[in-house]
Image (cartoon, rainbow, N blue to C red):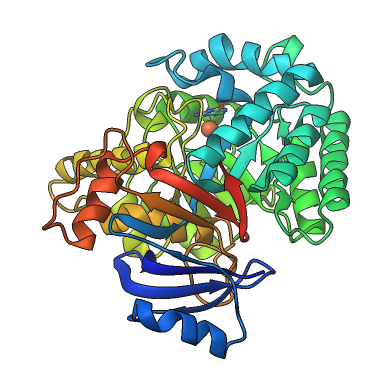
Length: 445
Ligand code: GUN
Ligand code: FE
């Protein structure tokens, strides 16, 4: 059975290239990949065109205010923090970890609790149109495997990582030894390879929480696993806040900066997803570009619990061709919505414009949409699979309905498609995300 849509399709071809296709005919093969996408096809000619291709599938004709966009990619998300979103606002990062986050994440030793919260988490993010998520799990292998099972069952494309942390965390919530931390990681890698052997939806992601909670032997061991498994992505928190950067320097006085630190342990390459990157020197910018690392921009947590309270230099990353996507950073970020992250990225970029005396121009809507879709796919090295509707990619898509009751700015007869799109991006919410598809499978409602 193929899926067939006729109507407006909007996607990104690059940071500033927003493509709006009117009267588009989009056909998805039974295997979930895009078979064809043609614009300017008269509605009346669709039945004959399909017949000529031997297709007799029902066509979903989109009406005014309805359009398809690619699914959102959340490049940085803490699944166990789904239950603590919104808590501890304005705390500096290390205080927030000690007082709010570690006690919360410790509860995931209980697999029944993990099952309940992770079920709600995956459902919740799918409802928000997040078709790909890069998740930090808790430190627990069993709970992390439950998260992977749930992503597969519910149909979300995901990176799932057991969080490695063996120091500077309370006794009740840290890996007992380097060996147990690495052993649990290997168990989680095996689990995902068993349940999704072809990596259709899932990959394990190596997840040193950050250097503060990992001693050098643990970082070394994870670097070794990365070298032995070149298919695995890697994620960590990077130059998030002054409090974090200063403490990191006291633990690793031999390194001047975090690029040299993580790189020396073999953790930086084109599969690395670095969350935050709020403070980046000229040297680090050059290195990040050369190493091919991606940035998970988390504009909400950067200004709420990141402790950096900082607008990251996104314009500079784009200027240099460093990969950038968006992260909800749920629950340091209080919102599970990528639309909220997009809007905050816009706000933060305007602050950056002022801070840089106009050098780093604020982002526009095409750019924040790129970050939420194709940019995120690039950061996750999934650009050949998702991020837009190029023929051959997997159909990860959202059907937007602008007329649903909610808070989205109402449509007027004279609105252009671009105006309707702008209204959705700036004022729509999950009520306007009517259907969600991952690899052609409907995952919402
Ligand atoms: N640094 C280390 N752990 C975390 C976390 O859970 N959230 C954020 N925002 N920063 C971190
Ligand atoms: Fe985070």
